[in-house]
Image (cartoon, rainbow, N blue to C red; front, side, top):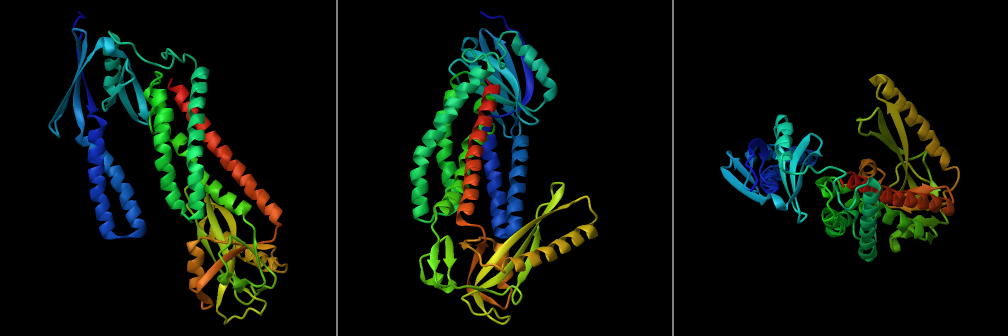
Length: 435
């Protein structure tokens, strides 16, 4: 019989499912309200605010007085949540407990973890940080404190990192074996990137759960090694396959050769085009604008757009109506530290300079044209013009060779692949640190 060493009371939250249920209910309420308002940007803002508010409201509602006591070879845990009038009891033989740890879960959020010999664990978020030292001293009297060198299988960082590499390697190989045929089917049937986004997550999460999370958990790693938040760089890294897919389609695409641009409406859609007979008239019809991006950094990104019609060889007229448009985007970064009038002067001067550059580029015929310049700002811009046709198609002209174009795409593909590998190497680092 183990001597009774008394009790210790701390402030914590109830089991996470209580918090999750309340958060979801509050989010649904706020979400329905946002849908009823049916405002574009405001809806997204309301949903974000609702999620944050719901979490903090749920955290407040589920706070509980948690009393720990050790007697007769058992750890007794009693929780009472007064706002919800919920009481929970836990009783665990000390012989079944591998140890305990008090760790940071997310920044500013700490929790008590009770690790069991069967690889399971109990997690109790701590709300009163002043109680942590006393709680640790209380539990050290009879329980082992788990830390980075306590793992019996991986006592060193290197051994834990190699194990994590193996698990993430299997995760990637298995995911690719399943996902690549799906991606091919999606390409053949014109699935949107948003469909692939949700499909990628729906596939990666269960594979990560069984290939990475469960084995890591069953090899005595601490909570931070298999926590969904610390592992997000692993199971979300495969989202980079979507831009890789788009670049690969362009890379292997063969330009459709047409006598004149208007023929593309009678042919099957293509990504790349070459035309024998074309005409331009940026001096006659030129539409332009600029858009300022987010100013959270030290500089403000500004995107300048210039659009002009593409003709079949006939002169471009100022009063003509056109359904094929050529667009170019020029990027500018201006320092936020400059006064507002200086920034506007810089934007205006850059816009004038790039307008001259845009007009000058058409002194030579482009080598090929890329379709699918998907930019709502561009369509909004040309739709306000008297020269606009409802079936308008936007093309991006390219003056470089097709080989140079593909070389840049290949570079982007390799960088994206390196991004996937780098993200998983970083994920392995988080796993190994929490061995």
